[in-house]
Length: 391
Image 1 (cartoon, rainbow, N blue to C red):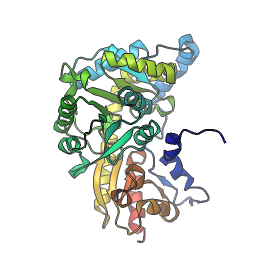
Image 2 (image 1 turned 135 degrees about the vertical axis):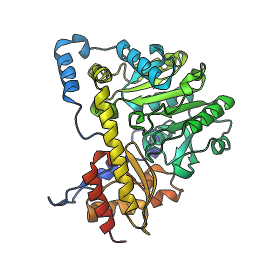
Image 3 (image 1 turned 45 degrees about the vertical axis):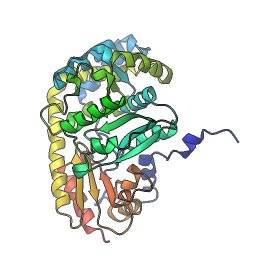
Image 4 (image 1 turned 180 degrees about the horizontal axis):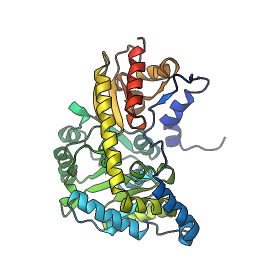
């Protein structure tokens, strides 16, 4: 038998793929099609203008098919730096930006740059399962941090978890899976804690474009020494519907980008050129369109809040960006309930057990709903099916 990395073997299988297997052998009548709220991904392609920009580049630009700079194309790096400087009231430079093959890889690179096997990273729970999977694969311990009211973690609670093996604190805001938007003062508290204890603060802002706040979600980049503490992650996939092109960004100090370049060159050599061309075109041309997308997501968020409020025994614990984190009223655990929802209600969603440590009973009580994939009519239909489900 061939050797197998025990850390890889011990890592759980991809949850979204596991949930899709629940559909095998189940039919959905035309008058009650499947409502799929299992994955946080746009279901439509990019706007036509962006697609045409990619198509034109594919035909007319020879470099679109060649290796590019390891840290990303200079024009996209500069545009990200300028856009984020404006958004956060900061002064970022292109040298602070690396373009990665998706935000998942941005996290993998960030984690690999700060921690090694045997180290620890503090992660609020419920956690994003791909973050947990990567840490497990690397032999890095994910230390769970319980969230408080509104699904917001507490810096003081995190301080109590720090050990000599702790290397970083990871935050996701707006959060996947809870949807919670962390207040600026909470982020500042974690930043100050990380600085005081010599840790990295990794902040995944994949869903920043759909934050309900009109002002900057935090002011961490205004600190002239932010690069000694902060690593920010971002995704173009949600903003411009580029999920299949895999384009993300990692913002860090210039010194850390030297290490990031080593990792990127080894893992992917460079991020695909066509995806970067599309992301740049989107940033330059789709500001108004993206603002409209944000308003639509906020309308769906409001519809989700109303829907859960009308369900007896259900509790909305967090809601924002693409997600709702809900407590269900049934005696069965969420993993069993999620599979029953496929068969009896024609609904595919993910159980809380996929986002929590195995020994945490909160996982069995909660479900994640990726409501951004359905419109207000679909959210109403989802609520009707949940209401009709027998206990």
